Amino acid sequence: MEYSIRDAEAKDMAQVHKLIKELAVFEKEENAVEVTVEDLIRDGFGSNKLFHCYVAEANGAVVGMALLYNRYSTWKGPIIHLEDLIVTEAMRGSGLGAALLGKVVEHGYQLGVKRISWEVLDWNEPAISFYESKGANVLRDWNVVHLDEKGIKTFLNKL
Image 1: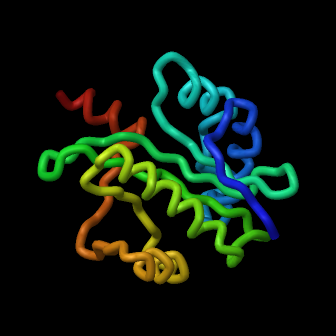
Image 2: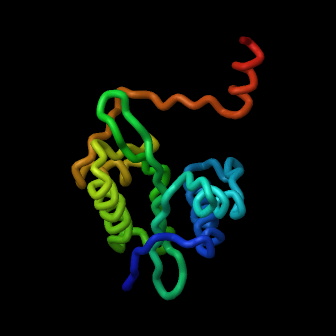
Image 3: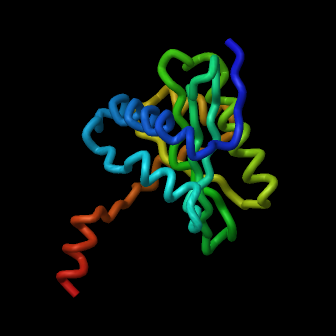
């Protein structure tokens, strides 16, 4: 199947949101998605852009996406964080994931970043193998730390 990859537009965010929900189901977190289509439009296309997004299209539908944003490493300098790379289940194995990742890597190279970072669940062996086959290092000795909205409030209440 043929597909194309391009910069996302605000009009794509409803389909991007569907992909985000599909990923949440895959990751066994189907009720965790709080972001709305309106949030994605505001945060990706408003006056204070918080992310960049690429979409993959096939037959007029968005079938994949990569969402990334700038970060800064105190050790390395400018980096980008790949928040999610999602390919709809029907398109997995088509080369679309590799093409999307390639677009992200090209973007990072053009920006002159020192690193591109992302997370992968420890049980998602197909994704881990895929990333390692592309030259990525999966750091199995680091733990991801999150302070969620409730945790932020708890923290501030203890100050």
